[in-house]
Amino acid sequence: MSDAAKERTYSEPEILARLQQELPRWTYEGGWIRRTYKTASWKSTLMVINTVGHLAEAAWHHPDLTASYAWVEVRLQNHAAKGITDKDFSLAKKIEDVVLWQPAKEGGGLEGTPADQRFAYIDYKKS
Image 1 (cartoon, rainbow, N blue to C red):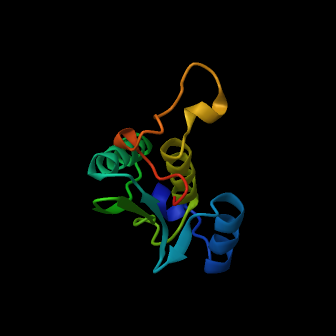
Image 2 (image 1 turned 135 degrees about the horizontal axis):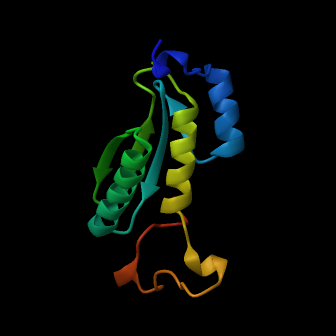
Image 3 (image 1 turned 180 degrees about the vertical axis):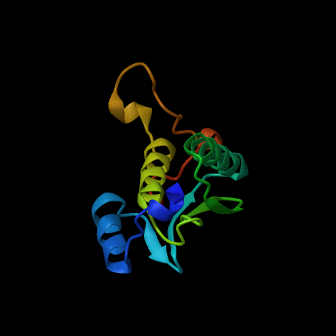
């Protein structure tokens, strides 16, 4: 039996409960867990795509992405298991942590992006 066949898929009520508790900005729709990140520009959009790509490749679990000038939608589903599994929740959490990371709020030596709109990255208020 393959690893994918052994993976537990979650029911819709279980998915909704986990999203509410663990990933409140993510939604469940059409068999996918989804999240749209608002960015400040095309450059920022590409940085988010590359970040998600790096995390997905390292995890060997690949989302579907849709992007435009100032947003990126991430959709996760375990194709092999034909549903939402722990892999989807784990990767969503890692994406959320990395994309929304604001070093300035942690203190320490990293100050984060300047307030100047020319250097804007993620629109944290809208994401």
